[in-house]
Amino acid sequence: MKRTIGGIFIVLAILGLITAPVQAGDINLSAAASLREAVTELTANFTKKNPQVKFLNNFAASGALAKQIANGAPADLFFSANPEWMDFLKAKKLLDESSIAIFAYNSLVFVGTPDLKVKTIQDVATLEKIAIGSPKSVPAGQYAMEALKKAGMDKKLANKLVMAKDVRECLMYAERGEVSGAFVYKTDALQKGVKAKILFDVPQELYPQVTYPVGLTVSGS
Image (tube, rainbow, N blue to C red):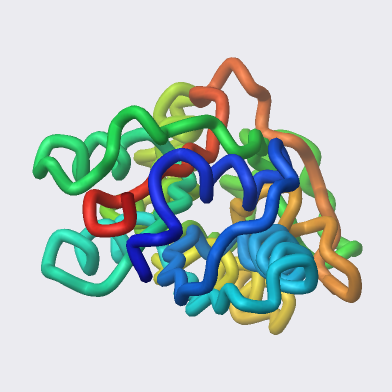
């Protein structure tokens, strides 16, 4: 990323909060997998107005991206699916803390084939295989595990959980019928063409509000 594009200006510009043109440069952008469509649309629209700017987008689980950045992978902007991985990079002095802002919110749902008679989180115990993102690196999986624990379902489902590398892989498993159902973000389930059906919304009182913080890395500021 050229130093002529710098600081909080580029974050605000990409989020559409300012419309002034920016100078030429490449931007390495790392974003949570569940933000693929939103970020792709945002960056495409930004490039239309600023053709001198090129985005190099990298989508994966937030934890995987944060670890890549910590290990020296090129990144100017980081969109996380929870504050935890922002804090991870902040602790390593790799983020410009003054640039961090909340980009979006989301919620957790359970999806499966339309014929499944599953209406509550307790009903999930009747299923054979349930996909969640690996809680160690996938925020959606972490939220799902928190919800299961608070609902007293984690031990009942311990041998039924199938760990996925990110929330999109969870959705893919459910669509292919490789699992009975999956915990995913609502925005993923509502994508055009998704075959899996939302069977129920996970009660918000069972897990923290899903937030997507965005911030500049030190190398991108």
